[in-house]
Length: 294
Image (cartoon, rainbow, N blue to C red; front, side):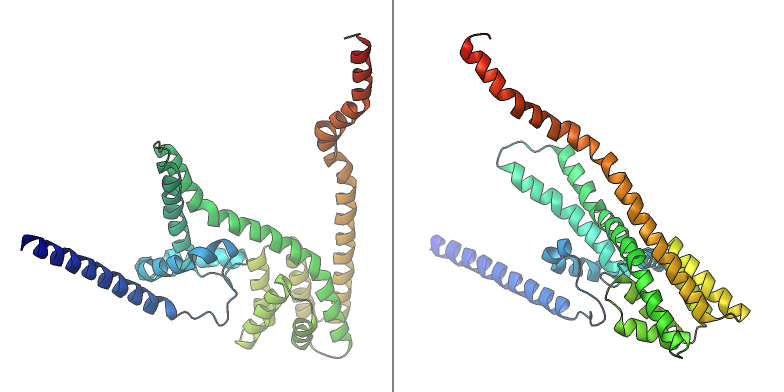
């Protein structure tokens, strides 16, 4: 009789645990199905495996974070060019999720050996917390390089469109539609959106300069704004800017070409020269060994 009661109790406990798990995952699936990313790109590759956890943390933390802090983080994401991939709430949640997940994975990997170093777990947590920060910085570096590389192309598009009789806004629209895809296209699209929302052309361009924070973009914006204020020819201004940006790009390429021999010195000394000496001296050493000199 007692054994039957114990068996029924154990069965009821297992059934309750299964029902609780099903309810939990059903509630989790309900929370995670309502995601609006129609106007956003996919999240970064290192976040995709843990994206359900990030969304769950966003649902829990999003409404509890101060609005001033969220605004500050959102401005940083916009300046670094990743606001179209993750929101401020998702970025903060991803930092906490990775900071908790990496120590758990490290503990599971080290638990089999029987020795778990708490310092290592702390380092894993810190590394996970700052991993999204490193991703943002690396994305900013690649984005800046792409902006500098593609700006002369868009300036030539603008020059041709203005020369054909379009105003600056129409030329910018044509450049966005016909120009190459990338960060520069996205930034000019934001400028068009700002102009369509009622901002002046100068304000929209100044917002572009503040958002990107690059010397080439700032010089271009100042030249266009000054030409608009002074009534100068927009065609000549854009043509001069396009030539200057092309010359600067060629100068940067020449500088990188001149720096290449200096950067090759360390690999040559550490890897290539020792290997060359080994290849040259090996037959001589073998010959002396065979003759009994060594």
